[in-house]
Image (cartoon, rainbow, N blue to C red):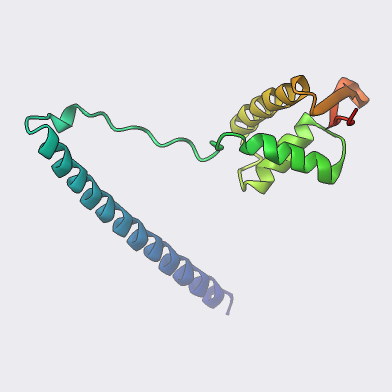
Amino acid sequence: MGTQHAITALRDKRGELAGTIDALQDQLRQAFIDMDHIDATLRMFVPDIELDEIKPKPLPPRHRAFKGQVTRAILAMLRKEGPMDAKAITLRLMAERELNVNDSGLQKAMHKRIGAALRNLRERVLVCSEKGKGGLLVWSLAKNP
């Protein structure tokens, strides 16, 4: 009886992955079509262009944020939750963006980015910090003058 549930779950998962593969193949096919159109347009302007010399640009990592996105998220979090330390802000922001909070390398990178954003916000007098328990800085919204 128990194996039937496992088989059903595995069949469902296989069907899900097959659907993902089909969707990705469709995206890849469309990307090739789009690139062929761009190549044809480039050849209209520069007939003797060497397209192989154009280096592919790497995609930004998934944890890459658009300009100002981290700052807005930090301010919204401090408005809603109140004073927090940078570690708590990092973990909360990673969870909100559905990033792996157990990935120590990613967590370290995000902590650096959030620390830089917090220092920038402090320079702009939007947030302030004070020493909390254990010597950690606790960040909060700055009081309006």
